[in-house]
Image 1: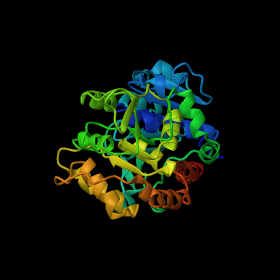
Image 2 (image 1 turned 180 degrees about the horizontal axis):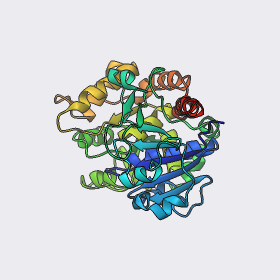
Image 3 (image 1 turned 45 degrees about the vertical axis):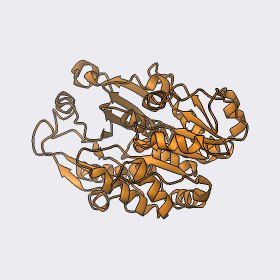
Image 4 (image 1 turned 60 degrees about the vertical axis):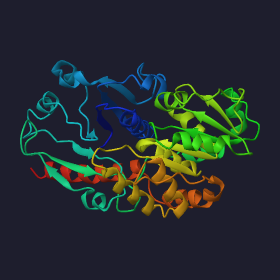
Length: 376
């Protein structure tokens, strides 16, 4: 009987938490669907606040393992082989890991081997999605990987969305969550800030300071907080705050990051994991895409806005927030964007999620592998 019970997910942390964040969400989603998951990671430190208890083994069906153990034959011999390998975002499985599992390749059943790629709405992703990639050298020579591209269309790999997300969101109590976080909300416009260091940040904060209707800015820990503090703004409700008050948040679990997005009227997000969660929040948002030195991110951003059918004001805000072609920051009116955000969410929600598509694809690979094995 063909199985995809055990999964090995490999993650090398580059920066900014997006890679480990996405890999953890995938691991947790798969575990929630009954799979046993090992997450091999070179720097698991962010999981201490993203997923408390993960490093201590307190999450059912998930174990977090140091990357270097993947090259230790003694440790590998004590583990049940996985049915599926996922190498995330261009990381390469250690030769020692491959050599151990493929040392008797003529008789061993190879796993389904997935190369999980970066999220993009560009057309090439649909063309490359699910394509085979033969391994031509090294211990795995003769094996085949398959590309898997997350995306926004039925012809892509979809977006991470755990089955319980809808019920969780439906039961969310904004006022109670804000009170639990110690945020004194009095009906102000709520805006979350999770960013790098956007050049338009001073102009945006000045825009809110000048408005009569107050805005409360909820700033995430790390680079966003450093960027705001560098501007010398007063603290929340401090003298001189005018129309803007600022709350600095502690590092949030992934669940509480979702809650933050659900609580706010506008979400300023960055990177891949947070923009997907902003989409599921169904609230107006502006995405700061990870900048690339050759400006390749401009095309990626335009493709994203195109597939989401973003109206002109949303496109203008994204251009300014991402410093594209010297665009000036327009006046942000998130309330007018609300129908667009909800419609984009609804269209994407009607599509199968990433884990559903991935497990189905792995099942088809495992079936082919099983058929070949049985014919020997």
